[in-house]
Image 1 (cartoon, helix red, strand yellow):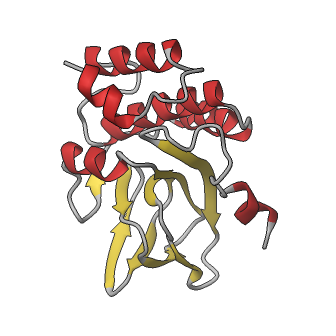
Image 2: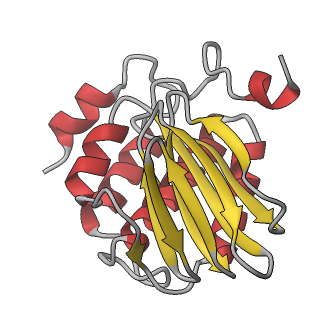
Length: 194
């Protein structure tokens, strides 16, 4: 097992019961050396946001051409591989899981094909990546809030610089208030949100 695989184990993580868990906000680059990254996304949702260049992503049997500012959401357990088209193709991965992850993705209504989302909020990805590196509940709460912000920006519901919707602020406040309450979970959070 690689160090990266070990870092993705959530069994004993203090934040394993959070509704949305961020595994990574990883920068990627492909230089046009043929198909690379044959990878199965396991139990995570993967959002790929193209920063610059052009590339091709194959997910199972479907192939998608991606240009700068394009976003593709890949559901869990899908085989995918990548190919740069021309100059280096750079993109960011956002890897997500958690008990409410699928419901969030369905509520945001991501289509099963690439969408034009605008410039990638790289600074926000960096903040999320730095928060994920620190294995604590407060840092994972910050990462989850940042990930939600990236998702809503990608789908065009909330620009990267905009304030969170009030329901998100309400959830973040409750999560911070209940940090040390072991009985506080997704069900309680859902019951308290208006």
